[in-house]
Length: 431
Image (cartoon, rainbow, N blue to C red; front, side, top):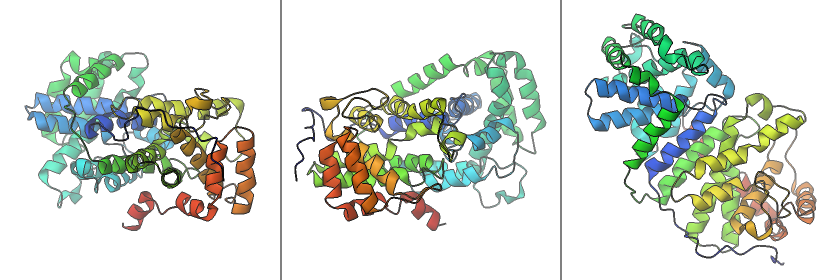
C-alpha cells in the first residue's frame, strides 16, 4: 500500500504544548459566548460584574479572580441557542437548572476547575430556597452572586444594541433591589448597589472595555507548564459542550479525536504529536456553537444562505484556538478540517503542501466518523458503503488518498476507533 500523497510535516514544529491552562480557559470561554450568536459577551459581562461587586465589598484578590473566572464559565452547560434565548429573555423559566446540572457534571472531575462545579450547580437557586441546607455558606454566596449579576445581564440585554445601558441602569438597580431576601442575599444586593452606583460599572460592560479588562487579566498570567493530560481533559469538556448542541453532532467530536489519534499512531508520529492531534480533533467543531439550532437540526437540505452559515464554523474554531499561546499548530489543524488538497475546501482554500499531514488526518477522520454515525435522518454507513464513498472523495482530491487507504486497510479498527464510548456518555452513566 502506498502513502505517497501524504505530505511531510514542516520542520521546526514543536511536538509539545507550551501554554498555561488558565490562558486556554480564557480563550475557550469565547466558545461559550458564541452560543449567543449575536450577543457574544454574556459570560464575560457576568464575570466582570461579579468581580466589580466583590472588589467593592473588599474581597481578597484571589476571591475576586475566582468570581471573575466563575462568571465567565457559569454557563458551561449551555450549548443550545434556544436554551440561551430562554436564559437571557426571561427572569425565571422552567427547567433553568438543567444547564446548571450539566455544568456541574462537566467540571466536577476536572482538577483545575473543580471548585467551580458546586457554585455552577446552584447558580439559579433563589436565596430563600429551603434546599440550601447541605451547601456550604461560601458556595451559597458564590452561586447567589453569580445568579444576581447573571440576572442583571438578562435585564440589560435590550439596552446593549442602542448603547443605552447607562441611561437605564436605575431601572435595573431597582429590579434587583426588589429581589433582596427572596431571589438574592440582602448583603449581596448591597454590594451590587454600591458597585453599580458608579458609572464605570456599566461602562465596563461595553465591548471595548470588556476586551481591555480581559487583556489586563491575561497580562498578569505567568506561563506555567501544564500537563498535557489537563489540556486533553479540558478539550474533552468542550467537546461534550459542542456535541451536546445537536442530536446530529452527538459524540462526533470524541469520535473524530479518537480516530485521528488512531491514524497518527498508524503513521508512527511521536506520542506528543499524537496527543496534540487528539486535542485538535476534540476541538475542531468549537465554532458550531454559533450556528443556530434550527440550521444544525434541519432534517432536509440547507439553503445557500444556511450553508454559508454552517461553513463559517471552522473559521470560528480558528479564531478561538489561535488566541491560546502554544496552540498555534492545533488551531490550524482543527480549522482546516474542511479544506481539500485541491484547494476547493473552506474557509481558507489552502491546498497541496499547505495542508500538513495532521490537518489531512483530521479531515479524513471528520468525514469517516460523520458517515458511519447514525443520524436521525439516516442510518450510518456500513464498511461496504463507506469504502467507495471515501475513495471517490480521494479521487476528486477532496481527501488525502494515502490517508484514506491507510484508514480502509483496517476499516474495522477504524470504525471501532471512530465510535468510542465518550467521556460525555461515561459522565451521564455515572449519574
